[in-house]
Amino acid sequence: MISLIFRIHITTSTKILKNLTLLVIIFLSFNSSAQENEVEIRVQDTLYFDQCNTDSYQFIDYYKKTRFETKDTISLNDLYNWDFYNTFFNTGDFDVSRLPCSMKGRYGIIKHIMTITDDKGENHTVVIAMIENNSSAAYITEEAFLNDELLYAPKQ
Image (tube, rainbow, N blue to C red; front, side, top):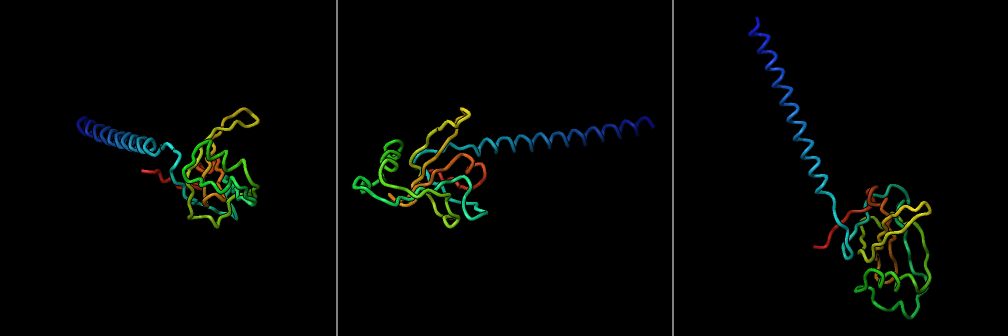
């Protein structure tokens, strides 16, 4: 009888140990893959417009130039960071709206990344991507990334 009780205890302990081991392995693999999914977004990388469940994206603004100036004929292809930002936004006029869902599947090239401070003093990352050469740009808040509105394609 004691032998039977001892055998049941060992069998139960072994099952518990196997289950705990399996849980630890699952946790470690999940944790390491979560760390592998962290990426560094860089200027010149590509963003594809993805999930859009309404008429427009919720966290991406669309800046489309409506009036061009002589300075606007400069090619923006080789301008990045503040050079791009100042050249694009400091001239001409714009229509500004949320990016329409008709842009789903299209892409933008990251031209500028900046940090802005809101009224509460909290910092937020904003990405500016050129959509159509010299004529429109996407103003992308970090919430767009968190809500799967974008697919990120790093430049190799």
